[in-house]
Structure formats: C-alpha cells, structure tokens
Length: 559
Image (cartoon, rainbow, N blue to C red; front, side):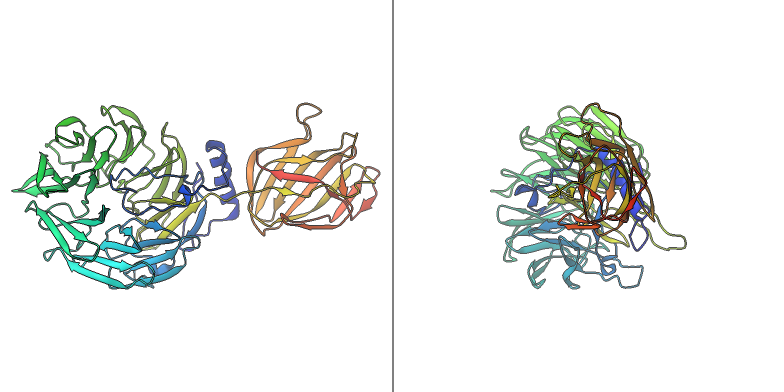
C-alpha cells in the first residue's frame, strides 16, 4: 500500500495522492456522494456513545485523502481525542515541548477547514471532552472538571476534583449521561457526578490510585468504571439511582481501558495491564451480575475496545503491536493484522465496515482496516524528517462525523481525512457536430472539481462508429495514464483505463486523443463549462491537415 510521506508542511506531491486514491479505490467500494442526516451528525464524546462502543454511524473515508491539518498552534501533545458537534471540532493539547508556536489550550476548529475559531489557554490537558447543550466538559491538568461555552470558549465553571493529581491532572474523559456529567479522579479512584451547573451531586470513592486515562461508561441504571480499593484493582458497577455499588470484579493487574458495554447482550468488556507472571488480558462480564463470561490473554495498552456487529476490535501494546478482532460472544479470535509497528494506544472507531486507529510510535501511522477481513484499506505514515527532535506519535482517539475522520497527532495537530466528492467531466453534445473526420487531437483540460477517472466515453455522429482509439492524459509532475480501444465489442464507446487516477481541481493537464470514424466535435478551440475548461491546441486530421478548432464530445468519469 502506498503511504504518503508527511513532513511539517503536510503537502504530499500530487502524483502520490493520486496513487493512494487509485489503490484505495480498488479495495474500497465506490463513494456515495450524498450524505444522510445521520452522517452529518456529531461524535460527542470518547468512543462515540455512553456505552463507549466506538461504533459510529454514517460513513468513514475509504482513502487516505487529507482534507486539512490544523495550525501549528495545536502542535503540542495530543492524547485527547477530537470530538465533533455541529460544524465544529474540539480538542485539547498539553505539554507543548517543541517550542515554536505550539500553545497548550482547548481549541475550537471549523469542521470543514480546520481554521481556529477560538482557543482557551485556561483549560487544557489529555482529557477527551464531551458535548451537551452547547457546553463542553473536560478534565484539565490542574485536576479540575471544566465546563466551557462552545460558542465563545468562555469558562462557565471549573471545579477541583483531584487535589493530588499528578502531571496528567484529570485525564479521565467525561461521560455525559441523562443530564449529568461523570468523571474519575486519578489519585483516589473516585467517581464524581456533576450537574450541568457545576454542582457535584454525589461521588463514589474506591480509595486507591487508578490509571490516569480510565473513564466511565453507562447503560440503563448502571455506571461502570475502574477502581482500586485496598490495592485491589477492580471494575465497579454502581446503581445510578441509589449511588450504591451493585457489584465489583477483581483483577490481578490495573484496569487501564475504559469499559465497553454491549447493551443488546448485557455484556461488558475491558482490558487489564500486561504484567509478566500475573493474569492479564481482555475480559467479558455479565452486565447484571458481574460474573465472568470469558477472558483471553491479550497484551493491551490503554485503548478501549470498539464493538460493532458482535465483534470486538482492539490493538496491542509495544510488546505485541498487532491489531485484533474477537468474537464478542465467546472471545474467539476472528482475525489479526500484524502490519503495525508500534503500540496501539488509540481507541479504535468503527464506521461503515471500516475500523480506524493510530499507532503510538515516533513515525506514527493512521490505519483504516476492513472490519470484516483485516485487510489494510489505507495507511498514512507520518515520517520524521532528518534532524527533527520530536515524534509524530498518535495516542489520540479518532472521531467520525460527516464522512470525515478526525485524529490528533503529537507535534502536528489534528488531521482530517475525507474522500473527495468526485463528479464527471462532460463536454456535452455540440449543437452541430459536423463536419467530422478522424484524426489526432491535442489540448489541455482543467477540472473545476476533483475528478476520479477510470473511464472515458465518446459520442459518435448519428449512424457512424465515431470513437476514441487511444487517449493519454498527463502533466509536468505526473507521467500520466493511457487507454486504448479494444474493438467493436461490448460497450465500445467506453474505454477503461487500467487503474483509476485523480485529476485535481484547478490543475491543468495535457491530453492526446486519436479518433476513428466520425466522432462528434465541438468546433471551438476552448470550451468552458461547469465541469471546467478544455482546449484544443492542435488537430491533425486523417488527411494530414492541421486545425485548431476541434474538441471531442467526451465524458471522463469513474464507474
């Protein structure tokens, strides 16, 4: 699979982008241009929903097409995941150690362009925010739970929840559920429940230190979270109505990931830290009783498993940099992909049969796998340039909204990937296609929109066999693509290129076309239409006579 090299400018060459798209389109299904209402919805919290399934609605990108990169101000450490609400993306950064223009802050970005709308340097950290009623809730490095107005970025309230917080502060990702906000404090393993006005309504303490990124999940009347009572690690279930413990399940090692709930089957899944000589792995419990359903040995990091269609998706740690898919009912291994080179600390997200995540390594990579058969659909590797002192690690959790994948990268910022909405390039039918004669036409074409091409169609004068016999399209930075007529068989008015290719908006390309019989011709040297501009620089007819006013009636498209 071709991978684009990513340097600080993040502008891969056009030919490489075209190659990525070409390969990806042979693997991925054709793009659907129209977005449904659900696809234009949001990704409002860590792992998409209160059950933390990571099972997002709508479509995700089938190609490694970079829509935008956020500004260098956001290029700090990004261990939080972006979230998306309406037309905005929210993400917090911290530990901006590389200097330059990186600034620790909570950022609000335009969803379509990545342009900064506002930032707030008073609240930042490694917590993935949660959105509700035009309010943003997030943990901060100061050990607080903050509430921010999403329109202005103003801090509405900022309450201390962990006076003994370490470097990470409150890195737990808040859960918004039934008009309440829930978050864990690291130093004492306490679950805090806040109303939207900033009043702590109740809390439940397990007393001991827990993993800093551990976050709660909820379904029906149950709240699930990691705890540590008397140096005994356990998963706790608390009743939301009574605030009383329903059950707990003890583990030999630390629970690092946020639990994932399968509501339909009343099951819950979580991972524990790999420690040599102790039991560890991926666990499945009965949601009602806390009894173990199954467990498998799994060397996990702190990522949460994603759940979709009865399957669990989860990556491994530095000692096992593999991505796994398990049967959620019994824990049997369905497939694994060993192409990753580093720890997978990024909690995966599944959308439209694809699973997305990043790798936490110096040259971090964004991956998109086929959720059914482990195939790598595309990957986007961020290669460190020589002499650069930082790392392009990806521990951020991805978000999917409006056909777009959003993910944070250390020392880079937020990346947004979206498949281009390709359309046709159609010159239409000329008012008077006569006179017509075969020959060789050379000229230029400049699309007004991104154009994915694998076929070219030609219109013939009525009652004739007018056709294209050969076509080549290229420019100065790309050797181009060629296609040849294959005789009067099948749909012979269409010629198919061996591989699809991308013609980019407002880029000018040269073409050479050899025609046969009597094709329809526009008797002009320039034709401007909504799809772009096409010119004729030279037409040498079958008699060897040169002309300058002959544009073929054709259509370039992807089928």
